Length: 609
Image (spheres, rainbow, N blue to C red):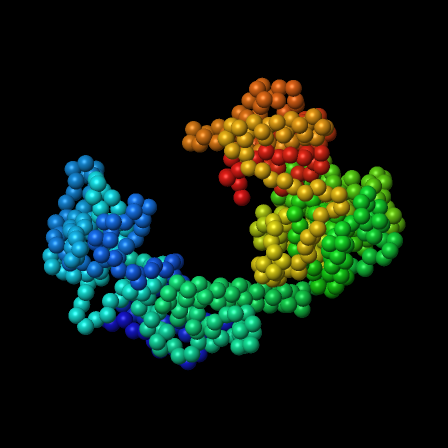
């Protein structure tokens, strides 16, 4: 049965929410290919974008190929030539496969134009000998390579010259589509061409005035030019519009979800923090002046917390910008009204670091005596506990009981916080650090721990994301950005150390810093040596550095395969400056706060993001 392209209605509803669009009426073999590509509707087809575009506008002569520089060889070229000879497929003796496997079949030929000739080679495409008889004229397009001192085109694609018919893939920019065995890239291209010819005007959701302000072309023009460009400039301009539409559509969905949440989900309306509240007392007792960005972020969080629907806020700031202070301020607003807060970190090292930091900040503001009554006086010191996978059984049981009965105000931990055995008495706020390390379902399980209403959510990241991009990616979240560092923070200097001389200079810098009372990290991509890699490893290098380089210094080691108690012991020694140099893997990549460490050497830095 012949393939049929259904004529779509005039004006495609390309920006409808989730309503299915006009289905494609395709029959025959192509229907199988479309199904494999998950193309069911006209919109699916038009948004089946090319993987890349190939410039087939330039036609070379064979003489020009012979004079190309070595740097140009290996590129794809196009010639118009006549088949001079084509040999029958053969299998080289050395390439014969074991029994049961098909041997490689090689087809060799030679093509010629008025300026010279060149060899052509295909592998396993035996049908080529039927399509390319001697004397056949065709456009050949493929890689130019050197083989045994002679030039050849390897696996060239070709299009026969037919009288009265314009070439389909010559003299234009060719889109290369994801394809299947049942539906080639060229066939996808023909289907898209037929659909665009019959589709009429494509609806554009952007008003003309806004579109012009954004320097974007019409959506219909973008679709046509991206699939059928006249030059590579068309591709770039069309891509700008289509990428905008992808982000715009994503943003619409996220904003819709956020508005729906605000209308339908019951949250916890916390009390606004008064001047003598836990949160404000905490800020006033800090040993440093909060930055303006911290103060703004605290106010934004407080404004969210008093609303009747749950807060969903992203707090972004680089390491050292003071995210923990803002998160703890929000926790104290929740605790003030008799609710609990949970603080989830991706690793035990980071969770333990948060425990130390939070306790230090609270000790400075409220002293060290914990008040165990959720409804105690404002000046009380909140109760903080740690729960991780390594928490001893007896301590774990006691902590779970305290959490369930309301004896813990703030529970800090890892994935252990979302286990079924963890029950909160009145969870009011969940803080998720390095949120990209957790899945959507993990964050939802933490939200589901709420009893009196869905708890507020504050997610934090140190990944630098421009505010406009953060709003686009996390459209269902409000965004706070800590874009300034605390006063007195020294700028960070980054240097590239190359070879043994560069490494020696780095070691000298480490020794100079340690001599002045400071400390250093040395980070490796591998934990153990590997036969498959020449990269240096943390274990082997820790031993070498201690015996050969820093023989008079104390060298520590921490990596992900160590027991929790051993990791914490190594980190404690480093925090106490008992260890001057800490050799580590990426287990320390997030949240390790040792202000006295002023230098970090990263070996094989190209292996890190």
